[in-house]
Length: 152
Image (cartoon, rainbow, N blue to C red; front, side, top):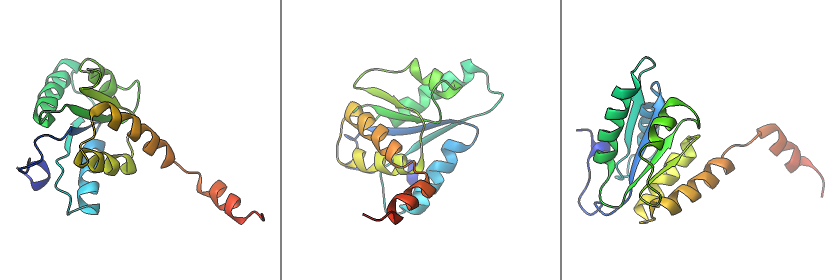
């Protein structure tokens, strides 16, 4: 088991985190976050679905990944896009307040998710906060630069 997959003592009461995507995106996001925040010990699960994976097999793997990620207070699933196979499969496991799903995952959102889990936030509160964080992290740099250059 990799260090990032271990559940350290004292974190058992936190909400579990699981990245879910088409192709290798979930694994790549987890690897990137672990490089950017090597000191963080908050476990971060990842399930990358194969492009040709049968939905029944993917659903079984997802069920096992959710069970592994759940440390007692529920799980927040971060999926790549609303309406895609990973998100659609995840919807079968949605339990308001216990298993929440946030779509459109991006790197700042994943980093914030780890922080919120450490703070002891519940899955519903985390989901609301992560949607906002994800939106704020999307910036058209050219427009931002134009706004900053305008005289007051």
